[in-house]
Amino acid sequence: MLIIGGTTPGGIGENIAMNALRLGFKPVTPKPDELDVTSEESIFGYLNNNGPFDHVVYCAGVQYLGRLETLDLDEIKAIFDINVIGFIRVLNCLTRTQQNGKVCAISSLAGRTAMTGSIGYCSSKAALNHAVRCAARELKSHWQITAVVPATVGDTPLTASVDAQVMKIRGWDVHELLKQEQIRQPFGRRITKDEVSEVVLNTLVGPMTLTGSVIDLTGGA
Image (tube, rainbow, N blue to C red; front, side, top):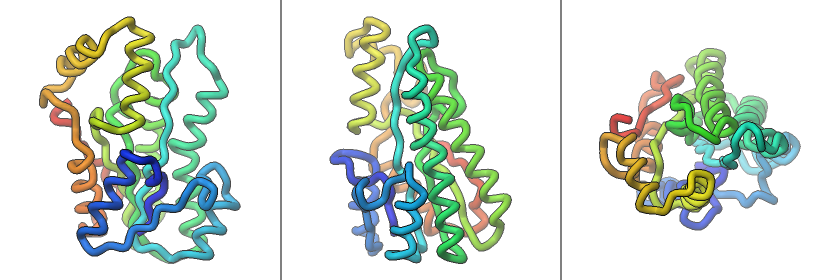
């Protein structure tokens, strides 16, 4: 199992790797200097030298908040380059180096929920979801291409970064942040990393006919 973006301590990728190991998988989590999702040459070289991989999890992702009037367009380009174009690069290189496989991307509730100050992240995740559907339709029965769509995942470095940005932009303290979040999320709490891992791993061992599925893990949000 190849986990792309699984090297950040405390992140979803690291958690998936630990749970995969318990299930008997042999997870591989290359460092960014070994597999750079912004470089076709880097991805192709890594896959060609280390593959094939029956199971691939795409966890790479970044989020920068900013209102339209002060938007940094270079940050928007960086968000798209990692969140969605990187995923497409990986699929392109996988299909050139092997004949079949299962690929699951970590998406976000932001892909279908409009959020103030998140035009780059929200639109990149919407694009990622549709890229999954398009790839599944094109590749057909030899590939299973899916995405898991969690609401806010607790206790990750990305979530901590976004929390800090939201509180700064909106002038909230942490209590107001969590209060507003609970109003939007019927389940009443954040999704855990173990819950995300469970859905991803169950998907990857599931039937090939799951291909094209964008699977909600949102607690009803």
